Image (cartoon, rainbow, N blue to C red; front, side):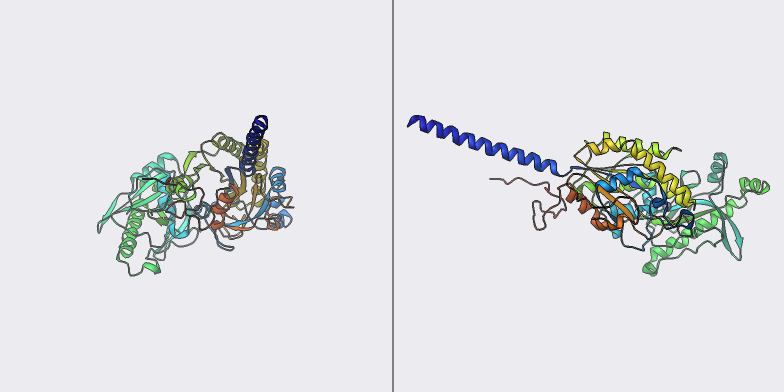
Length: 469
Ligand SMILES: [Zn+2]
């Protein structure tokens, strides 16, 4: 009897142990099923249109991209647009949407550029994106003749000394250089960002009158801002047109650097930081003030990169940097501007070649990327940039591929705008993107659960333990 009791006790503990083992094993399997970290490789301005000189294909379709195609075969594919088809988005708005923020939360490009350059700004400051141009007077207006005329550092320094701070009606306006002929016009004292641009963006076109936006036409602040900004720009022009640097340049048959063009003003807004909103520690590995400014604004850490003449090496180095930071961050944005820059030269073949070079860069680190079962890999772009025609960016969606354990796979064999359209992810918009990432990382909250007083998107939240007191 005693022996029987002992055996049954041992059996009981053994069965309990086995159950526990199975539970641990299930938990282990469960933990291993989906990835826990996301690396987003963003090829800026990748999407494009079809060109006769590429045999009716887009630059991405025409490019030899064995590594991107390998990812397409390994993962789920679809199309992405930050907002909706047809809407031409700049990188900052498309990234803003991609990072899961709404358009009404967007503070404006000018202020992001200022943040990216480390220029101190206060909540009521307005920053306009600005750069020097060459203009000519015609019929009582200014015609844009040359955007950012070539100039030496000494000439630029002299030009900067030639313009002054303008003060009127309690507002103070001045230019702050960020690099070369670029910078921001800062307006302090309670200005409004709701005014039109002065930059026509197209050479041969007249400068645009600065006036309040229709939505703020009756707003006194917007009216004053328009008037004072116009006074400042007119003052810059009158000082620069007879500046000694420009008199010399005109003798040398060079374009004078005689006006400041402004556009896309902005002012700080309050938004919750990326970690607060998505529960993920974010890192951006990118070049360009706008990405550093956007990261600063959204509380995403960033590692400043600088572009060399070797886009494939730059991309490979950035991906390696992402891999070395994957322990400390949950969502890493790896960015390259090169497809967008190539498209802006309006040469589809150059863009195709740049894409091929990026594919080689990706290829040199792809096996390492695919080795880690904890990694969710996303390859996409922010917007389309047409390699021909007058548009700066265009509204067609871009391909997106997602690779990782547990991700549904489809039959798509090539990473491009056409093949990815037939993939399992379907059409992904900016508002879908971060919830989709949370889902693939097993961090999506079941709707209705309230583990924190705030209805956060991610799960589990930062819970307060039940107190017996
Ligand atoms: Zn662009």
